[in-house]
Amino acid sequence: MDRIFFLNHSPIDFYFKQSPETFVVEEVPLYPFSGEGEHLILKVRKRNLTTWQMLQIFSEQLGVKVRDIGYAGLKDKNALTYQHISINKKYEGKLSSFSHPDIKITQTDRHKNKIRTGHLKGNRFYIKLKKVSSINAKKIDNVIKIIEKEGMPNFFGYQRFGIEGDNYILGKEIVEGKRRERNRKKERLFVNAYQSHLFNLWLSKRVEISKFVESFGKKELMTLLDLPEGIIEELKEQRQFFKLLPGDLAQHYPHGRLFEIESVIEESERFFQRVISPTGLLPGAKTKRANGLARDIEKDFDDENITAYGDRRFAWIFPENIEGCYKEENAWYELRFFLPKGSYATVLLEEIAHRRL
Image (cartoon, rainbow, N blue to C red; front, side, top):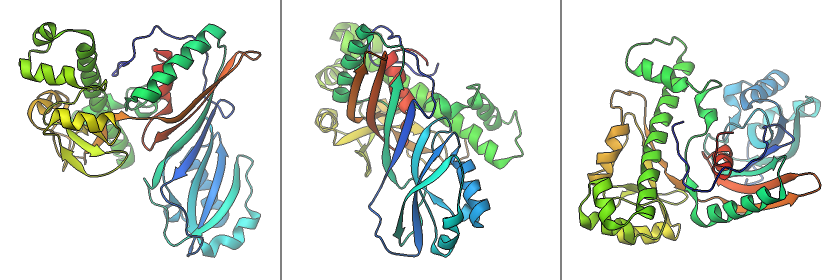
C-alpha cells in the first residue's frame, strides 16, 4: 500500500461493495449554464457504464463523433452517476429517439461553450455501508466529525492503478526504457499511474512526519527527524494536522495561484482557515518543484526521467456537507458528502474504515 492513514482509530467493520445501489455520484458544474448558445447541455444519469461507454452510445445513436461531445470528468462504472455532456444543437432533433436501458437524460439546457475536461467544482456522493452495528455506527459518526473539522490527505484511490493495482509498475518500466507500449493511450495511462504512485508515496511521508510532530516532544523530534530546533519549533507551533515546511508550494483553496511558502507560521494560519492548501508533485516535464526543506523530502519521490507533463496536486482537501445516518433496522449507514474535483470518495471511505476496502 502506497498510502497511510492520518487518523489513529482502530479498524471499523462494515461491508461495502460498489454498485448503483450503494454508490451514487452527482457532478457539480463549475459554473451555471447560460440557457442560450449553440451547445446543448444534457444532464445524464447512467448506471453500470463507464463515461467512455456512455459517450460511444450517444455517438452511435446521434451520429456525433465522440471527440465532439464535451464532458467535464470521468465517472465510475459500478455506480449510479449524474454528469453533464454537451453536443451541438444540430443534433437536438435526434434526441427524441434516443433510448438506452442504462442511460437517461434527466435535464437539458443551452450554453455558448462546449464543456471542457476539468470544468467542474467537484462531486456529491451518496454511499451506503452495510452490516454496520450500532457501536460501529457511533464510531463512524465520530470519525466523520474529525474529517469534517480537519480535512484529509488527497491520495489517489485504487481506481487509479488498474484492476490488479500494478499499472504504476508498467509505467515505471516504460520510463526506465525497460518496456515499450505501442498503444499511446495505454502508455499515458501507465505513466500517469506511476506519477500518481510517487505522489502517494510522498504524501504518505509527509503524513508520517505530521503524525510524529503530533506524537512527540521537541527533543525526540530533533532525533527522529534530524532537523534544527528552530524548524521543530515551527512544526510544533502549527495548529493544523498536516504540517507545512519551508519551501512548500501551496495554492489558494479550492483553486488559485501557486506560490512558495516563505513564512511557515503565517501561512499555516491561512491553511488552518482553509484559505490555502499545500501541493504535492506529480513528477514530469514543465512542472515547478518545491524548494528548501520541502524539496529535500520531495526529491526522494521525484523521477526526472519522466518526459510526460507533470503537475501539482493538492496534498490536503476539505470534504464538505458530510452527513451520516444510521438505519439500525437495516444495519446500514448512509453517508453523504461533497469532494472537490480529482478527489476520491473511496479514499475517504478507507480513512473511515482504517483499512483497505
